[in-house]
Image (cartoon, rainbow, N blue to C red):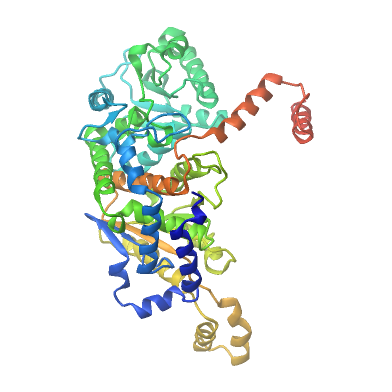
Length: 538
């Protein structure tokens, strides 16, 4: 059924027209217990959505929508290993990567193979951390460089920075994703060939950017170590294409395969997390998995109205499709989480940036949000101005590790809470005028300036609060967003787990590279740009 023709959708549309007449500040004034009603906890993780433009009635109607769209069945089918990736006819069972109980795909248990792969990954990571893995010259490996892009890079890279306080001093771990040779060159400036290991992460072993960087890395090693064979001792691969890896010079014994039922942007829990495990160690990596498992078990069991991922997903849908807030700013008040918005951009926009449903019919509503953001308090001196006085309604997630008491940390957390409050409350023209008068400004000047000081408020925000940025806390946080994405995709009727659109740009890039100087068949702009490129190169 077309989602907009459902009974629950019509009820939400009617409710929206009523609630928009009441600013959120008025909803707080009318309900002193609003925070208690509109916040949820999983152990020491708190999701506060009381500053969203909704009420308990909205929540009830959103749960009705989830029920009408069969979300419970969607969650059960995911956990059962069914082909919820319906275009590629695959399961999407990343929860099995961090599970302690059995999961099955097509009737076959995958538990033992998951545990065996994890054990092998962690044993290698600990071998490297102890300095026992030797390169071609016999020198211990002290520097690990991950070569990957997209799902083979963003998750481990984000987590590596987030958990830097839990990482060992050695080995050093770096990430190279961009085909721009400057990124690899910047890493190699700090690398010693005899002590450097490259992890080539590409499920297909056909990702152009990763292979170009791998070829450049191999040439660098061969020049320093004296042979291609010696260079091969400084590579591991995470790939399912063992033949291509062997042709590149990587022994199949040095390859980690990935389950076909795990998509790239959901894969940091698998062998893709090898560089992260090298950094935080086996115990840290297991704690990360345990945190994700906490959220998995909660997601699978909790009633919808008490289920953090379900409520986060439903609130996001409410903002996008009913309030017109189709942009989501993720604002982590933590330097360690600076790369969280980059990671979530792929998780949300590649997963749910789709326009047709299960039957191949156009989706009649907006789907994924335009996700952006950055760490507080830096953004307060950059783009928060638009949030306060711009013309757009923007949904916001404040992500706040509380941290230990201290002057700087108190200021950091205080800024996060103050920003969420101010963006919700705003400032009326009368409040602005009184404030200007209190500063000693003349009446006529205060009246002139007041409209420029007004902040409309009513920007909808949620706050995710937890005590500290630990591996377990990060695992919970990332799994929270993973399941939120699935909730929204299921209700919209789209496939969260393919990315056919991405292939179009790759195909055109390959065509341009193959065509070289030829311009036949190109659009006029691309042909003109190709001529300009050749001219600039002389």
